Length: 440
Ligand code: LLP
Image 1: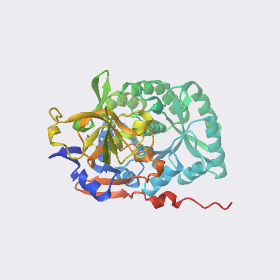
Image 2: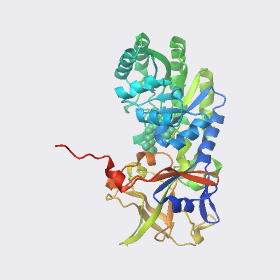
Image 3: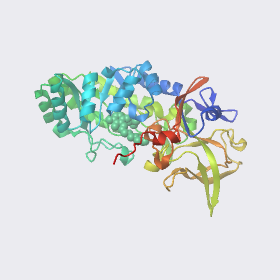
Image 4: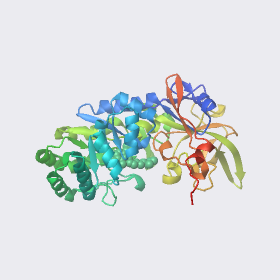
């Protein structure tokens, strides 16, 4: 469930009219709902209650310190993939001892910092990395806690760029090789085996792939437990969210298009599929959700600059671009686009009878891939209209860039009736301030 809804024709986030937030901080602007994030966290926590579990929020989805702080206070652990993410968690008063450090290319500096900070586990992706961690831990006279990432070779039925658990991906170690890797690790003096990990992909909208992967790994987890007394099994993240019809998701269901019919996948379905087999394992379970916690908790506010007609086509040119939110350009992903002030004709959930037309909603960046919607049927929009690109809380700001020398957008957080800036907008001056005059 999320807290974005229309009240008297105005799009609200919790108890705040989004137009007020845009007025105060300008656009493009990311706005997040604290209540939504905490609601999602609480629902997942409750669904996993039968298990000894730790929710390790995947920081990569949205790493603003204010968001991390909300989750620190809710009791979350963190799944980090870089030294920078560890630094952010610490800056948000998070505990490194509740952090798992993942990623295929950890550098020396990152490993050393994570060792010093005493992270909960290094999720190791290759034998070469295992050797390196062991060597670096030796120089510090420490034992590095490790879990090997298993690749269960399961099709998560999602976009190829975010599928990670099949044998064709660079991630993890094939199940057949796993026992030998653990045997090697067991012989290393500066490594302590603490767990096993998997992650099969992102935006997965069915429970079945999770259940299949768990079933494949269960015998291995049992064996590792009896041989090495491992403490945890991390099943990764990847739970999908609703992107289509994002505004009717008050039911807490995640919808996705499936053979023309929307199918629902809820946190209940997820828990029903995974809790029983995991409970049988009698081991601590870690989950690493990113998108599920923050995806539907954020919108990108943008203003219409120009409405342009060219031939048969109609373009709505907005002040946000692919540099602010790259998901449509990169994955062709669908984001609902909602007018912050609903045109009178489209109120009461009906656009019939009102003026609607097909249009492309595009940004100012000099690339044809710079779009938010193509041939989308939308109410007629006037110049200066404020729009909300929905479900932009995950993999939105974190993937933003300065392409076309566009300053990074600002971010704001809403909590009940209050809202505040949590990242100021970059300025043109910021764009050049890190650059250095050459001495040659
Ligand atoms: N754990 C690991 C090891 C991961 O690689 C990821 C995401 C997660 C957890 C969190 O996955 P989530 O629960 O958020 O699905 N930029 C893409 C998504 C990339 C996901 C990468 N890994 C997008 O915008 O859809």
